[in-house]
Image 1: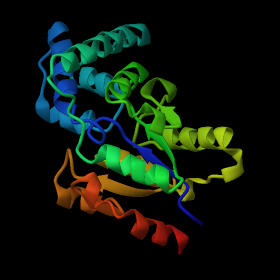
Image 2 (image 1 turned 135 degrees about the vertical axis):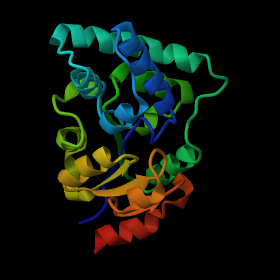
Image 3 (image 1 turned 90 degrees about the vertical axis):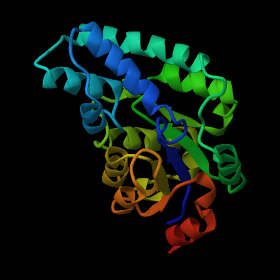
Length: 232
């Protein structure tokens, strides 16, 4: 067994945008004459897709909506996301990301993103920061029916890596996931992957109890040490 692919979560891992997402969800709820709650947001939204987040937030308030109506709410949110980012002087990308991606590329590793965010939001950010070419595989929220902590997004990512690079013969056990939330960590572990937990959205001690490795910053990830663990 050896490390062959590294999959990144997006919101809260690559970009520090959870506050923006919470505000957009809050605005949607207020538009539905419903009261938002930061505690509810953290409990049901962090690490999960917009669909799962909105569905649970609405159900907690006694509101059940059709799939078409839910899709319209998600579309409205996705339209607001780039507007919020455009208003910022600089995109809140976590420091050290570009250097770490280059380190992975130099090591010959395949990189991908597995996220509950919609594709338009991911593409917008990657285009803005110019790091899109590093990622050979993208799995976004529209493509999986069950959000993290279910592992299906990671299974799909492995499948796509093997379609693009069949000579690698990648199994889930050859992959490392980088996540910032308990739901994301659980999803990757359920898929059979090892996980680096980024203490971006939750306290270090909480992430440390769940991930195989835990760091505060990308520069603290010891790639050679992780590769050695995979090799043994």
